[in-house]
Length: 168
Image 1 (cartoon, helix red, strand yellow):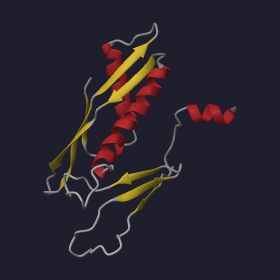
Image 2 (image 1 turned 90 degrees about the horizontal axis):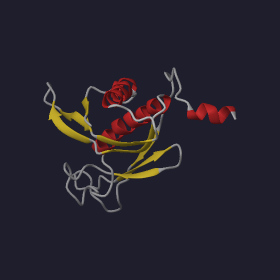
Image 3 (image 1 turned 180 degrees about the horizontal axis):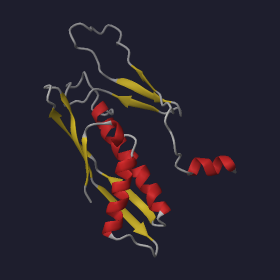
């Protein structure tokens, strides 16, 4: 019982927690390398046993040297920001006794160039559509406050310099 309660609560003081991902790539048999005509397809493996097909973005490296069906690092970064924000939002909505039935975010990242001339994910726009049910319906101001708090506390948002905007 104690373990179930701990798993459902948002922990405090998570400094020092470590997270791992294993990234695997292997050159294909007979595939050249120095001519840069090698596959960028690879795998991400996580501690729960999930494996994800990954690749360079086909917007950067054309197929067949990338896999358009795989997740690219830029998409994963945007999804990570969106997912972190959503998880905090859901917890804070539950604490406020609002019932969320559905949360869907079509997050968009835009590349830019920094002051050193390097390309990076300059902006991410989160555009969540949230459906609430029950007698306690949040006002637009309460929803905005939940988003503000979620953004403020999101570990990923606090880890990057990318400008993150939430629109609803």
